[in-house]
Length: 98
Image 1 (cartoon, one colour):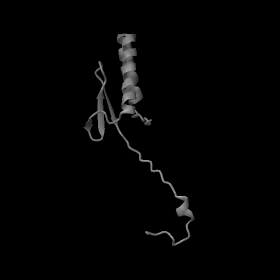
Image 2 (image 1 turned 30 degrees about the vertical axis):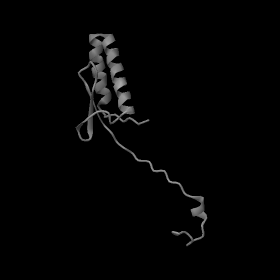
Image 3 (image 1 turned 120 degrees about the vertical axis):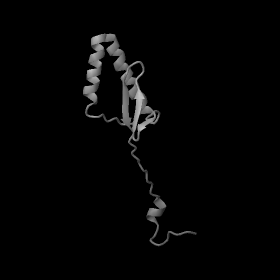
Image 4 (image 1 turned 90 degrees about the horizontal axis):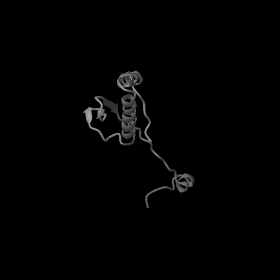
């Protein structure tokens, strides 16, 4: 599972948008929150699903709301090394191509 990191303004921007929709209708605010959760979940599972707006920034529009989620994908490579017991215990100088 990918790890999420949020822009410092994300929380306040989201709170302002939720309050806006809650003032119109509590049900609309609830649908907005659900749309944001769904979109963030989809982006987390399939980060390269949406097009690059301007490399490296990607954009995904919220369904039924005039908002776009902007995000970047940061790839961290994990290398797995395995050390062979035979090579680790072979006498020095005995490893070669045969």
